[in-house]
Amino acid sequence: MDFDSTLKNIFVHENEIPDEFRLPALIHQREYLSNGEMKTWTGPVHEVFSPVCVQTDDGPQRLLIGSYPVCTAAEAGESLDAAVAAYDNGRGEWPTMSVAERIQCVEKFTGKMIEQKDIIVKLIMWEIGKSIADSAKEFDRTVEYIYATIDSLKNLDRDSSRFEIVDGIAAQVRRSPLGVVLCMGPFNYPLNETFTTLIPALIMGNTILFKPPKFGTLLHYPLQEAFRDSFPKGVVNVIYGRGNAIVPGLMQSGKINVLTLIGSSKVANELKKSHPKVNRLRAVLGLDAKNAAIVTPNADISLAVKEIITGSLSFNGQRCTALKIVLVHRSIADKLLAQLSAGIAELKFGMPWEKGVALTPLPETNKIDYLNECISDALANGAEVVNENGGKSEGSFFYPAVVYPVNDKMKLYYEEQFGPIVPVVPFDDLEETIEYLIESTHGQQVSIFSNNADEVASLIDPLVNQVSRVNINSQCQRGPDVFPFTGRKDSAEGTLSVPDAIRAFSIRSLVAFKMNDANKQLINEIVHEDSSNFLSTKFIF
Ligand SMILES: O=C[C@H](O)COP(=O)(O)O
Image (cartoon, rainbow, N blue to C red; front, side, top):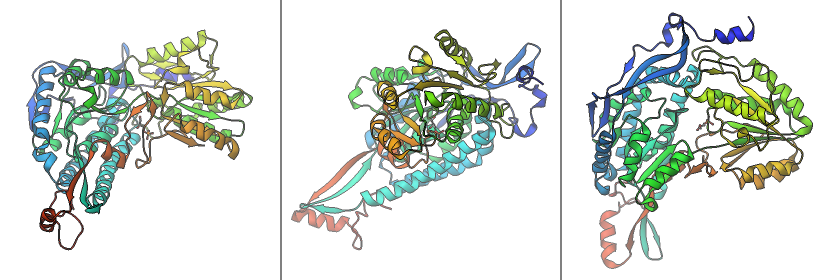
């Protein structure tokens, strides 16, 4: 069968979906968690269609998998008030609870979450088209992240809760919560990236208003009861609806203390500006990125190609850490392009439940139009699609395109395509690559491919001052999750990683006793005899 007919037949008929990967039923979700109660929604709903299309007489059609409430600003406001009341200006049960007790609640929640693994993994696959293997990995990584956060907090707290006497002051450093956190994750890691902010925010004693992403919403439904049953009333509230209809009002209320969003810098800036006391708002943001691969003549080209293919096309390029542009020395461009094209031709494409599948359908309904627009713009400015079949599409599926030579007149030079296009730019002098990074509005990561130590060394220092991670002879990536994950310029605000997220959602505050006679007596009563710790305080394990 030729490629075009393979592409035409990429989608299956509904009765051909293997039973083990089907959802048990359509997920018509009507409840949202607010103030410790599951409230039933009777208003309008949003129908959720999978990026997986099924063959019909009218061609491939996205499969309906469920629906969720389109709550309004009123319900969102009530849920926000529940989070505000649960925080109670820092006097609430949750923000004053000991860290050890909070950890127990999070462990209880995680146990309940693990019981729901099967349905959550399937929903990740059906809602965003991520392969079943990667959906399971996302789930497992999230659970590991939660346990790593707990461990990290125990260590951090043991250190920071020590009772120290300096210059006649006996002091204990605490990590105190910040207030109400509005938490919004992205569609590409709807579980993992949401929880890498929500869990640290929660465990540090903040209260949460959580709005799931536009795609990857239903998978949070099975977790609502776990939230309700694991945390005091109002500590976690989950609201569903259209972000642009409900979120601006939440920000304008001035009741949000921390905005955490993994998404676009445009949306983040607008939301921040709409907060009446923006100087009091903390923002923890993971935003746009345009990570570049720099391939020099001293690179191992086969290794570079392998890394560039997974780096730019894993989950169809829909990762904030994806390589989104390749800068290659002109002398090796042809070789790189040939190997890239050959490597892409080896990638298996198909349905997300298929074993070994690398390329799957795209969830965003307007994405293929945008990708085509990027390609047309590049062609109009003198580039070509150099790989066979690059840019062909069917229904919600888009076959990766390698575009060359890309230049600064093209969208693909600047814009984060967030999809399966690999723009390749030739350069003559390494200095041009540094210039690219300096001029970019993005500053997340870069990958250098070279085996020449002097060359690599000469790039590291200027580049690490432009981006927040320089990868040598490997693709860009977030993990391991203990490493700091952030970005410069428009790419991020605040740092996420297991230990950094704990810091991001708390403030270091001090309890200080001047060592006068009155306090010496007081301290004797507070401090445990056989320890240097304030055992009577709630921060001790
Ligand atoms: O989309 C951004 C993710 O945090 C990327 O994580 P990853 O590099 O592990 O795929």
